[in-house]
Image (cartoon, rainbow, N blue to C red):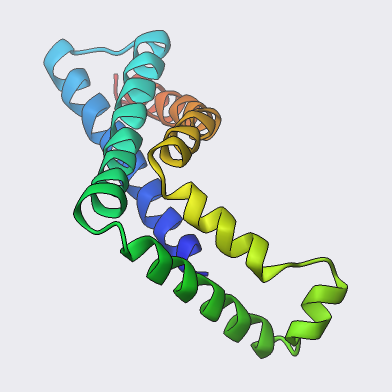
Length: 146
């Protein structure tokens, strides 16, 4: 649950970086082709996402390495609370094949530099889709204003 809110914030930040970047280029150049818009939006999204991942690496691997365990513990605790709100207890989760120890280990591994690199790499697909949408929207807006 904690990760969900964090992901929404990161997604919003990536979209804002894309839109702001393309608007600046469009104002400076007067027009923006879809191809150029997509490329710039993709680059902006990758850089914004890389900034998030570098921050996580700095925080969880250099500044406060012990925070990984606390964060993972908190994620497990919030997951148990959320599932309890739906009437699902620990035994039911285990019966469904959910192993909280495995989830804890996955969260810990995702906060390592290698885990953050994989996170950035796999987010490329989502960022590319967002870049397509942003580039199409800004291209359409520009054509309508002429």
